[in-house]
Length: 415
Ligand code: ARG
Ligand code: ZN
Image 1 (cartoon, rainbow, N blue to C red):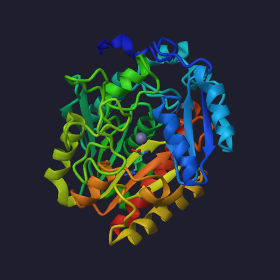
Image 2: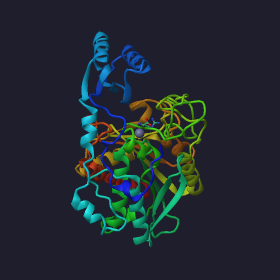
Image 3: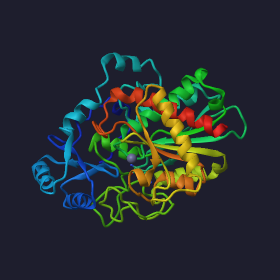
Image 4: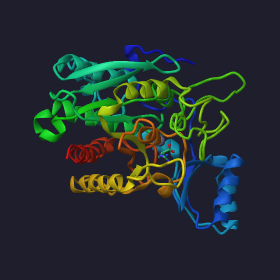
C-alpha cells in the first residue's frame, strides 16, 4: 500500500480510518524494582504478550492487546509486581487525540496560501511541507527550504534553513519525527520554526545570530503510515528480501557504535538497527548534510516523545563523554527555562543511565562523529497519562516550553 500525496490527503486527519484498531487495548506501568522483575518483563515481551512503549530504571510501560490483559495482569500479580493502568483504552485515546478540522478552518485554509498549520491539530506531511515552502517563498531573505534526500518510499526529506545575517554564524541543528508515532515531536518542531520565522521581532540578538537547520519530519513514510494504517508504528518503511517484517529503527541506524547494546539484529524487532550503519536514506542524507557543514554546528537537538527528559550522550553504554558536565549544565539551564515559561518539569541526565543503553542513536552520532559539543535528545510530554497518543490540545504548550529550551541553549552556545 502506497498512499498518494494529493491535495485531498491534507483534510483527512482523523485516525479512525486506520486499518489496525486498538479497542480495549491498554498500557500498564509496571514497577520493576529488581532484576527478577526485569526478567519477567523480558519474558512477557518475548512471548508476545506486551510491547514496550517506554522504560527507565524503575518502570516499564507495556502496551497490551485486549485478549492478553487478564493473562498479563495475572502473571504480574503472581510475580508480586506492582502495576497501574496508564491508558485504559488505547482506541478511545486515538479517537480523541486529533480532532477533525472545523468547517471554519477548512474555509480559512483556502485563503491562507501554503500555510495551513493550526498548532491545534496534528497535520499530515503535505501540510507540513506546504508550510515550509510557504515560509521559503514569503521570507526568502532569510529562509530557504532544501530537499536533502528522499525516504525509502520516495518522499522528500525537507530541511528549512533560517539564517542569521552573520557570515560563518554558529549553527544549531533541530529535528523531530524520527520515530513515526511520536507526532508531538514534529508538531513541536513546526511550532519552533514558526516562532523563529514569524515572530522574529521578539527574538534576542543571541538567537538572531545563529543559523538554524531544521527538519520537522525525519521519517515521512513512517509518519504517513501511522496516520493511515497503524497509529503505533515506530520505524521507517524499509522492506527487504528474506523478511516479512517492515522497517528499520532510524534511531539505531547511525554510524557510531552501530549494532551495540540496545540495538536489534532482526528486522521484526522494533529496535532493528538496519542492515548496516546509515543503511537508510533518512539517516544517510542527514549525516551527509551535517558532515558537509560540520564545523559550524555547536548544538544538536532531536525531539522525541515521551517522558519529559533532556538526555545527553553517551547512549550506547553507561559511559560519559569527557565534557559531560558542560552538557549537564546547559541541559539544566534549558530545563529551568522550560519551567519558568510555564512549562512542565523535565529531568536532565545521561540517556543510558536514566533510560537504557541504545547504540546507533543520532545524539551519539552527533557527539561522537560530527563532534557537535551540545548534543541532546529531548523526550517531550507527557509522563505516561497519554504516552504517544498526546492530545493535539497540548501542541501549543509543548511548543512553548520546547522553544524556551532552544532559546536557552542558543544563548549558552553563544557565550
Ligand atoms: N527513546 C529514545 C530511543 O529509544 C531514546 C534515545 C536516547 N538516546 C540513547 N542513545 N539512548 O530511541
Ligand atoms: Zn523516539
